[in-house]
Amino acid sequence: MMKFIKRFYLGLILAFLYIPIVVLIVQSFNAGKSRAKWEGFSFRWYGELFHDPNIMNALVITLAIALLAAIFSTIIGTLAAIGIHAMKKRPQHLMLTLNNIPMTMPDIVTGISLMLLFIFTQVERGFVTMLLAHITFDVPYVILSVMPKLKQMNKHSYEAALDLGATPVYALTHVILPEVMPGVITGAMLAFTLSLDDFTISYFTTNPLVQNLSTLIYSQARKGIKPTMNALSALMFVALLALLLVVNKRSAKEEA
Amino acid sequence: MTNFKVPVWGYWLMGIGLAAFIGLLIAYIRKNRGFRRPIFASPYVLWIIVFTVIPCLLVAYFSFTDPQGNFTLDNFKTFWDSNYATRQSLGPDALKMYEDMGLSLEDLGLGRSSININTLVFSLWMAFLCTAICLLLGYPAAHIMADREFRLGPTLVILFVVPMWMNFLLRTIALMSLMEDSGLINSILEWVGIGRQKLLNNTAAVQVGMIYNFLPFMVFPIYNVLNKMDYKLSEAAMDLGCDKWHVFYKVTLPLSVPGVVSGITMVFMPAVTTFYISRLLGGGKIQLFGDLIESKFLSTSLNEWNVGSALSLIMMILILLSLGLLNKVDPEGEGGGMV
Image (cartoon, rainbow over all chains, first blue to last red; front, top):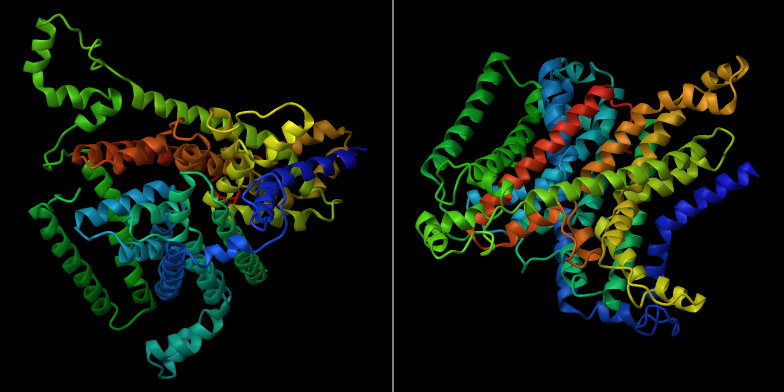
């Protein structure tokens, strides 16, 4: 009996977490506009989605930002992880603390502080500023993905390579990188996902003309939800879910 | 904010900072007679300074200055009394004139107003409530999943982890569409015979949205700690004659404190700072501290931006305080909120 109550309780909590998402996805296939009445299965809203220039534009911006942010943050983050790993205790601790700031600060504060930076330096907010902001919040996660791989590595192989006459860059690309590659790839995927997923920081670091999907959805949802928004949200849910499951599986494997 | 001018010292500081960074880098390379691995971190060091440290300092700078860049405490006075700036801009002469005419400041709506403080207090209360409910709902869930006899546990945890990373905005919208006047819940209520209810645009809706968004952040750290806990301890307690409840509150509960603390921080912080949950589910009628800050920065008036910075600074300090508190209780970071 106790066992049943426990499972039932867990089921209730999971239902609370997942029913809204499932309903939203089901509704996106509803032929009619109604949210309550099922009028048949159709791809109507998905079709309209792909003919809406605003949404298509936002999709391109979102993907471009996510891709570029993932590339840049992976390069900066991997190098940083290698550097931090080799540091002495004190600077290492300082760097790891600084690295934690963007992850612990609430998004709204990160967003606003970056916005103030762009205003102070008189950089027009738009695509570039949003990209810079995304790189900023992506790098710490890349570092966290690469770090465990570095710790597993043989400490002396880098020095051995140098002793055998390798240049630091050669040792980096031929000794360290191949060993930490799985962590780098996980970090890149995580950065891509987080960037695709971000709303708050993008909201504060762009202008109303350069929108990504999240900020577009927000500005539309304030006026009420249209069925095309359901379709768009459903697509994003599925894409994010797939990415997250892959990333999770990879990082679980690396830590083991 | 289009007519904002960078102060002269701003340019100087940027130049000096860059020069200092390059100088330090060269000094480091010379001192170590060659290229050492820590050099690889230098691009990120520069990045952190420009995009994390300086922005934080700028929040402080803007909160202690007026639009002309002069030092002032007015922004914090406005936090204390939201009509302060309006009275200031009217000037003492105008206020005296009103008084001579027999109009009190209160009649004019210019008296002391603690809207900002009330919003902060309301936000803290909502976040507190959300944290408490998440703890009450989440602890049992984590406990059930961490049970060694429950084989599905580790699989089900993933269902709690995934929403932690998933766009909060999208999840809030999913909830909003479910709770709308013509949404599914209302249709069911009507079908059952209760009739349609106004589910959105009230405090309860915002609270439900917050719990919905942040519950996984409570469950996961508690699960983590309970799962790593040495089950032999509770078995030993059983062998020594403890009953189930005693084992729980003498052994399991004290050992799970790091997870609980981590969960509390991870729920409380985003709950205090959220703004879109209250905007979407509260229909703009419920204002949280995050909404207040956002509204300041949506304004075109320069002064409002300074006030917004002051409010952000207050929020940052609150968060630093709670993080410091967390470090005291859980110095090893055992709760480990990250995946």
